Image (tube, rainbow, N blue to C red; front, side):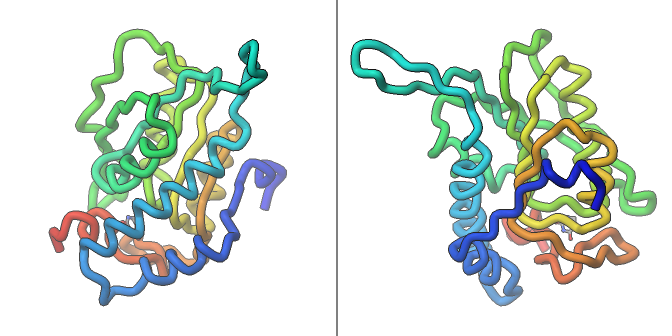
Length: 206
Ligand code: URA
């Protein structure tokens, strides 16, 4: 991979590997899928917040998060990572982005964006469990950079190798946290082995 690969952190932790194996199992029900995604988002939140700046407060010499953090879930699968992230970072604001992949072209289409006029966020965690072609991920980061966001951490559960390479090529300045990178992307833009359609499995719509 290119020199940008130093920005990619794969969560190679036994708990992540265990939960991810269960998540990939097509026999589990939506409730368990939702719960596992939530548990993985806690672990992603821990890892993605590791480098956040802290500043001491007197007289206890404690530490306090200095950054204003916002979550940017990409609807709808990104919603599955919000609760866990908020459990770990309750002070974060949440701004939803609506982007879907047009089925024939696989190109991203924006359908929802209610970002406030001014960007007052220091760090943004963009949430999408799946980075397949990365078209949606690249578009979401473009939107946030155009809005004025300077520091972006992309949190995903599974990415395709092609997708992660395209995302780092388009945005070499962002940090990416991912639980696994799968090698194959099929002609429909699905990650193989992946876990199927995360939104459908999350919301029981398949
Ligand atoms: N989105 C999904 O939910 N799954 C994939 O495999 C690709 C995109």
